[in-house]
Amino acid sequence: NKGAYPYYMLKEIDEQPAVIHRIQSAYLNKNEVQLNSNLMDKLTNASRIYIVGAGTSYHAGLVGKHLFEKIAQIPTEVVVSSEFAYDDPLIEQDAFFIFLSQSGETADSRQVLVRVNDEWKKPSLTITNVANSTLAREAEFSVTLEAGPEIAVASTKAYTAQIALEAIIATAIGRTKNFEMAQNLDIDLELSKVANAMQAVVDEKGRIEQVAVDNLSDTRNAFYIGRGLDYFVALEASLKLKEISYIQAEGFASGELKHGTIALIEKGTPVLGIITQPQTADNTRSNLQETKARGANVITIVSESLAQTEDTLIIPDVNPDFAPLVSVVVGQLMAYYATLQRGYNVDQPRNLAKSVTVE
Ligand code: M6R
Picture: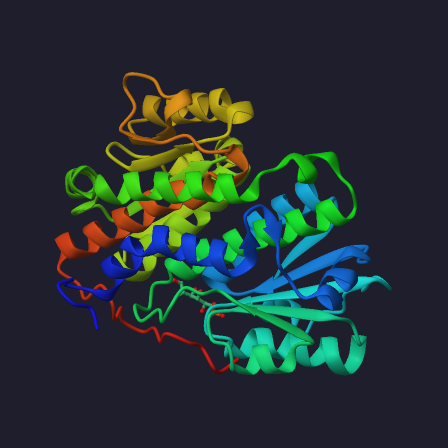
């Protein structure tokens, strides 16, 4: 039931701070992580983690790679399930597979799980929003996202829930291995800060709507750019935009622009820059400047401590490792309002189904 909301997507965007709190209650006891001990043993012994997903779940996996490598210090590979299913990868002896799937029914991902079970015989965990789904049943372990039903075709709260759970699992592994960073990380506090920051963004939706109306109402294309985690959010924010508003949107690693893509910039092309990572903020700013010099209409989404007077949208600071959870909400709202303005059905975009059960 969408209540007073015009579309499920807006309701689901608004629910995200509450979803983070539900995940905290389900998997944390104050700062202690509560997860199945067999699962923790197998994860801790893994020499490599493979994260498997499609679409938005793949994008959540990219952020997960950063978290598993930094907090748990386990080399992690993220794979697009439809590409991996028929590939001939060299699987390490102590590999562990994590499947990310909101629905738990994505056929491309299931095809990989079949190989994990039958051919490679490796341990697996499905992180899903549907407890009794196919992927949850067929993996060795499963945990649920606690996000509540996601009805809109465009995935929003499942993405942020997946990242929050990846952060919790990475922290648990890192602590078991006595890594200082994980020991010192107050994951409960960090997630509370994230939930507050998300709330601040959804409370600012009027401003985001204005930016969407001013810049995305009748453009044919748009680019999101960023570096590192900001690049991963650029991929997700641009998928949201193309999926529901039909704007030809792409996410690019900002440093890659000058290696070809900048040729596409024309007078008035919207270029949305995401800047939340201190170590690359200046680089992304100079890349934005390069697009501006070629006529781009630059829009910036920037963490407060990195903000400058000319920035378009300022978002609250959180630990930069968790910034995707906050910056993506701007991207979700931007897509929502651009779509409303262009007069399309937000929840039921053309040519798409909520879960993709054919390969
Ligand atoms: O249910 P899943 O998470 O496995 O679905 C994967 C993709 O089909 C899904 O994330 C899709 O990309 C979304 N519609 C994007 O908003």
